[in-house]
Length: 301
Ligand code: GLY
Image (cartoon, rainbow, N blue to C red; front, side, top):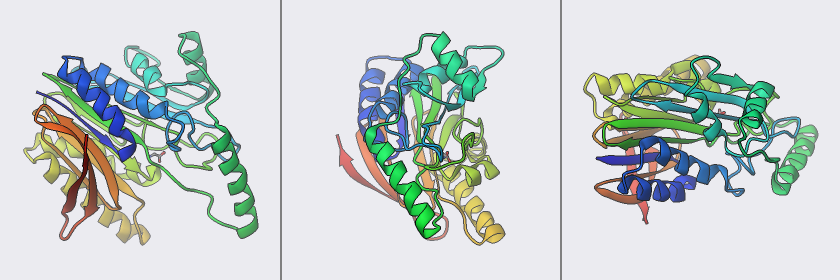
């Protein structure tokens, strides 16, 4: 069996490319990297990689992670700058016994020293949006924060599963701010004998619930991916609403080791799936009644 599931419609082309690789016997890790790099390389996607919106100081700081579900190896970067493909750096770090999670200048230096492609990740368009936002915030006393559409991907190839994330995080975040995406258990988790899950949404809230790990554990206990996502996401979103008056946006995707998949979300959310039995498809998900998720296909490639 093979399969790939990814957050947001922006991953449609990446999922298509990954599915072609998986069909031809590629490893789960190679297919995952192809899917995420396609999103990182596209300057039109303003929450991931090149073209990502910058922090308060006008610098694109990115977070990414990679996990191997056979060995539980995790590699991650947080606040990396100028690295063209943070997911490639995270994947390489997952092979390190020590120093496998690097932040800030250390992460950027590691990428440079290991010959990863480096480039200025701030596009003219993103710089213009940042300048406008700085003025708006000063004038209208607005909350500056906006946008947290992480690309999260889970892949399955035979007996092997991987998962990964990549994001430029919150637009106008404080320099050094890190979200859930590079944090194992919160932004992602995978066990090849069970399944994997990834998160997108407001990192500050997602990390309170360690939701990706929680979903994998529910699947281990026998719930389907859809049941696991529904149980974990709606229970936790309700807890946050009780504690704070509202919950931040949170959307989780999951796939089990047989290629079954599920999602749950407390906002309108798009995602993409392809498996041996399903052509690449983009879906729209919305929270439904009584802790369920309403899912409809919107395109098939
Ligand atoms: N979920 C991505 C972030 O909050 O940075």
